[in-house]
Length: 321
Image (cartoon, rainbow, N blue to C red):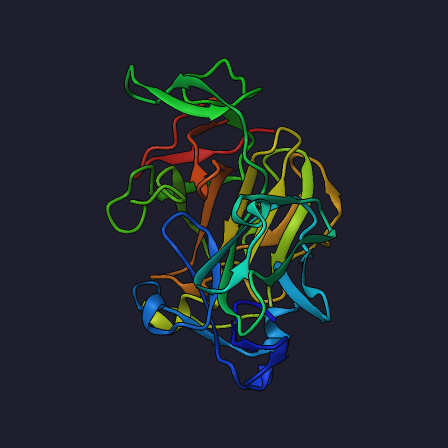
């Protein structure tokens, strides 16, 4: 029932709910949106979704119509927290609780009542709504040095490292590998969610490892095919691990059917979790890897080192046991 346009008259639905089109897109901050407005999402390569697909993963909404109002429930299917925001672009004679206009944190695997809409005055009333969610819960921020400069970069409280680049991670790949695109890469690493991401050129099927202990928050590996056409943007296989300090590691463009761990499973650093591939919006076989936080506005990538080394584009790195 995500982001369907609702026209209400005397507590009765006017158009059939199944007739509404639903468009899904992800903005520059990594926030996933659902809306019925195709034109409003054109800048973000919208993907038409069927209602049953919307309800299969991530966060979904359901509205229960009763005589005394419309009850909104949010369901988080992720194995980690999610932050939900609602918007009501059209409001006509409707009372919306203030809490429904604020960010709402959903616990892992939780369905939560988030509020009730009622008419402000007797008579006709209607509203239009959409929603968006970001994986994770907003983290309190501290500061640590950005690699290669003396400026300060916000980072989650509790992060620590003897390295100037923030957290020092284990390698996501066993053996020797090359960084094909590094931090602030001109080709595609120019937005908050991927500014501090790495692209690692790898043959399809290369084993990938957990860089830290964590829980499998979300995973998709049923897509096949890849390239630079817009149609591939929504076909990326990925794995998202949630770590104990609230940071999340993202592995993208994974090989079809290669994920070896299950949603909700606890993993340990160095454990084999998947295999590299070439799915989704991709120029060739590689791993896209990032360490991210929910900064309250969206996903933000943060810098790191790999086993004590700064991962600069063009460098060859060798994983150490």
